[in-house]
Length: 319
Ligand code: EQ3
Image (cartoon, rainbow, N blue to C red; front, side):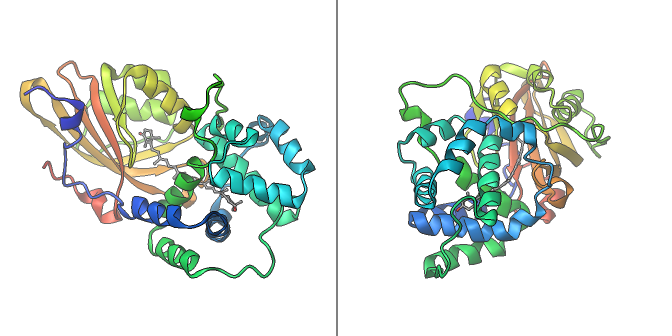
């Protein structure tokens, strides 16, 4: 049997992913714009406390200095409108610039606005704001899921804001990407049950932000499927994706299983935790990597899944 990306997506198909994340994100999308902004404020009030203070980084935020200066000059009404425009994907100059921020730059942008809202530099939540029943319902749904799923919902909402770049005619070439200096050496790890060099090299390269080395492990037409997304196909696209989203992640795989399947292909499932530089050791996300390697030992496909529960870390069933 020869594999297609589509069929590879089904390896280790009993893996239970955190379905609550897309479900809650969809609930959020149903809220009206002011309710969306209010929801984020309340959700962030809880979660923001666990943000690693060094995460946004002065050097990173300087990349957005121009926009920040403009925002500081605005009246509170204008600032509120700017936040509404971003959340409603309106076509404005700032919404267009935002669309070209990398994921971490988007998070850093809102982190700064949130800090300034607390200080009164940016328009705070209106005093006397009454939470609507809809906002309460989404907040309750979010409170029921674990922290790693909560931060993923929060991240998804921020990523989807701004003007849709695919609609823009004058695409800017440069995306603003954050870099997170690594404070400690790459964590040492052993994966109980997996000794496949390609898998070990992948984790090592990612833990050193060495995306070129990680991508060199892929077959030319190989694919990487991030949590809740479609596969990203080809080395060039995977490199661009990892430069944006893979920075500063700390991967701690612990267990796994390897199996030779047909025609010299091998499949490997590895489970463990991943920490984002935003929350450091405060939030360990329960992750599975499902690898399919071709007969040359190159990565033909890898899916990264956010697991439904810690119990899933032990699920190494082959089907
Ligand atoms: C100001 C405020 C509060 C109110 C206003 O009304 C609106 C907004 C938006 C506000 C601000 C909100 C803020 C500041 C939200 C911040 C949220 C943050 C920092 C969330 C960060 C989440 C990070 C996550 C979930 C990262 C996950 C990464 C994973 C799972 C990576 C996995 C990967 C692995 C393991 C690989 O092997 C390959 C690559 C890949 C990246 C897929």
